[in-house]
Length: 145
Image (cartoon, rainbow, N blue to C red; front, side, top):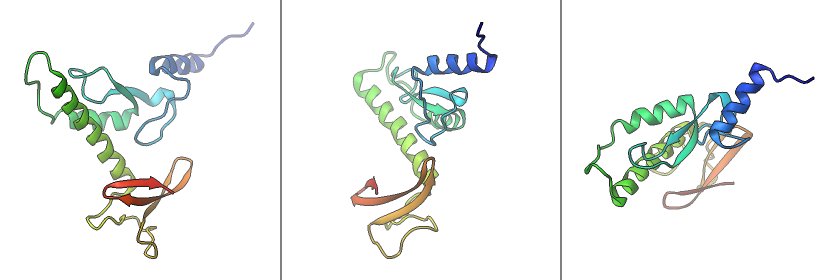
């Protein structure tokens, strides 16, 4: 007879709660389901759309959401929901940029690994899975190279 340990039960429950067998924090890459939570991008009052975040990133994002404007009307209209979703998305992108080392006003990364030879190379950072290089493709647009 096979029995499931408490640790395995916790993993199964966490995966079920997140709705996937392979959950990953959208900000930092943490993949232990016991450390992950669902984050409401626009805030619970404005939308049910969630993304997976680790407890640390979720805490940072939720604290930032507390500074967002409150509801204008008792029942938010579509434009208000979109505005709060964009605020939440901006918070997520800001947290990701901070994690990657940020980009200065000239568009060059402040990473010590940034290349001085290639004007398009922004920075190289160690991210889960190995080092990644990012390249500027246009105004505010970056891609992994």
